[in-house]
Length: 112
Length: 118
Image (cartoon, each protein chain N blue to C red):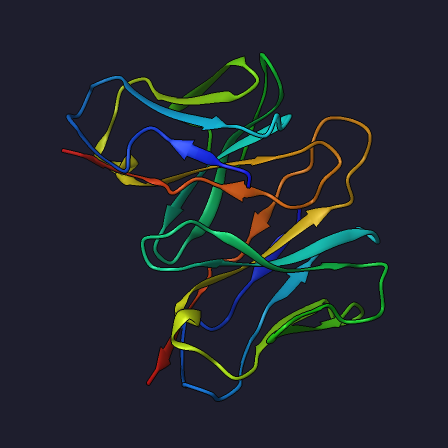
């Protein structure tokens, strides 16, 4: 089974802190994605990566950056956390040429 | 840009009954994929069912089936014989046909919270 693992289930950070959310997949997938999930807004794409060191902005990239130094790992970085970044963050991966995406369990981030 | 609309924020159904979740989408593409994903409470999102736009036949997966109306850009999910374990958020999603360059991404609706009552 494909496994997508996010490093933390729950995270509480202070305003202004630099925050790292880590995601690891074990199926050699080329494509990885970071979504933000908010009630009433569904899932919105922050960034995605289609190869090592390659990245593209999604629909809401402001305030975020990403890093993909290894194929299996995709990190989401909040350079200076703000309260409006309090949310559930979902990581997903998908094999090249495949249609099914596999999701991690999510990280619920609270910025205080 | 593609958009996906789920007009029912919440629904409920009695165990063993049938329920239909609605989804409409907007696109100028001719070839694409449509999905229903399920997110149980505090659990990972999983794929329920997938439909290729070029296929006229509606997809089915056990108790789950879709009604795909390409001209109307409608993609509803029918759950038959509802079970307590079907309680979850359900997301409709769209993806353009996978090309040779880079990657296509999923565009999600806002979700429908389904509760199955005993």
